[in-house]
Length: 436
Image 1: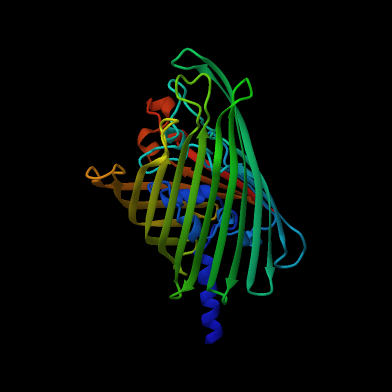
Image 2: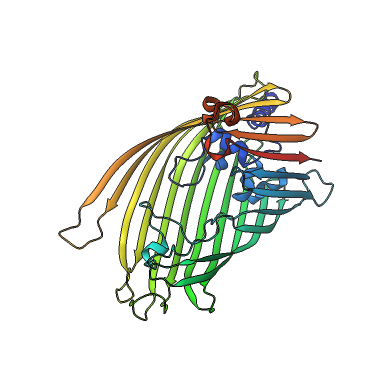
């Protein structure tokens, strides 16, 4: 009887992730109503096992050997390409991964506070000059390695380097011509360890560290903007615990800190601002805590129902000086508390077709502290309710996997060439993968 129960539980676990043998961030987005969390991490990328998890938990690489995928998660711009190769014929071999993708730091400098302020805003933009704006399509290339250490421990790590260069030309409001060149570089390191407690329960931990530089030079090779510091660190933990023959609990925690700091250098074409540089710093901190319940009825092959709840605490600090002779001070000190609830659903319609749906409601309570000295030190509070719905399909034919994440507005608008109603975001994102 004990062996029979163990087999049933193991089967339920396998079915809980049916259809994800080779899938991608596009699949996750079609199940999670991506967005609506104030720029925070997509929690379904943690709770649903998928090849998209590799960016957070590189120890999952061992489950995705001998596979390749191209993941287009931003409409007409590219997302990522991953190639994973088994280094031996063992049942659980070490896996080598080569990948390229858009930087998670796009854009590199103009990260925003809750109120939308950027480091260049806080450092005082030159009148008529749009400031330092890193190309949002930053290119990143890297290598990864995953392996099992014994029967119950999984290890993995990825390292990538990236950068970009972009020219900026124009005329300032004072009539001065500028011809600038922006460049940025960064390094992104991920490491993870996972523990398989038994056939059905597990714990996983991931650590991500990013650091970089940014420079904006004019045609005289003088710096207009330089980075004082670009740094990010995140810690993620999740568990998977069987609570019945058809369901398991998936709790998770993520703590993420991100800091972008630049100096706006003194320039001869900046009228009457003195000879000192101005500073701008944006710090964002997120604490994300929640849990999903993964339900996979054993008599319904390919069905996954995954409701979840959680909350996010997001704080922003903007510090800077709008004039060269003024010391940098706090210009924003805000926070968001965002509880949410939602669900993901995936069903196997045919052997080759999966249907996907996600929905989520987020209640965002924003608190904005007035940074002016007393008595003008009141706070402002307001709440926003955001409802999002996502839809998608998974198609599996002859070893190929095609994932589609379709903007639900497309079903209303129809094809633009026929109806004249355009759907923002190119209507869909896609990913294509192959196992060998």
